[in-house]
Length: 153
Length: 153
Image 1: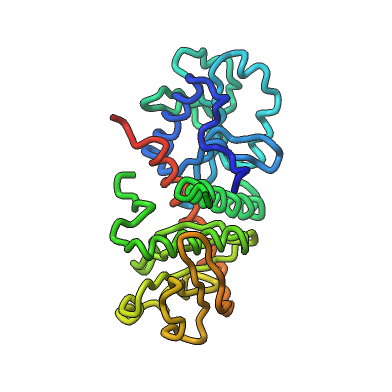
Image 2 (image 1 turned 135 degrees about the vertical axis):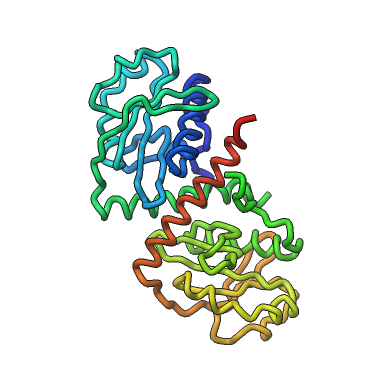
């Protein structure tokens, strides 16, 4: 268990952490999506927030805290291979028009969030959903287990 | 998220908590089972330890810390409806012969554990496994989320 990813990525900016908190509250409270932060995916990327709905729906939210943060990322479309809906999330001060008009968009701060534009649905293939669910079950269990028991002293 | 079960059940005895720790270490390290503690099941009971293997195998471990603890529980067979393998777990000082000879048995303390008798496999129906996996994904996400963000102050 020593190589588990930390729940909070210390490389994240304070702004991104606030947006993450607001996004997770929004998804949990308004959409009944249970949320993980920092989920490693099979393609080598990490999803900032990944929510799982009551019927197994999977949403991924990619946080962009600045214009340059968005501009340098050319691989964000790859997230769509791992979710039914994909959203960008931004802090309130960032211009919403920098994001592609056809993608979902969330605004959030450290307290709450709101969906500015809902994301189109592109359902996952059943085999990929099943594999992803298994991975998430084991990720969640390991993260909690590590917190409960950091291991033999 | 206010009604989430705590990760550690304060009603548990110190002995049971030590056995739980040893069981979870054993399952994680030796069998690659990622473990949850205190998992509420659809039948109203809670599994002391529930492990999920790399192929989605589900094991449930019921901890009995004393003879009376075992004797008063007449509903343990119900756990078998929610797992592929079922084990009892006991502290080292408890007589292994009090447990049914046809059931799996683990001995554990606060440091480690060992399988004394492996459990027979009774595979879950696919629909129940799928429903259980979804429930576990959401349980894990919520437990971590609550730790990350206890909610708006």
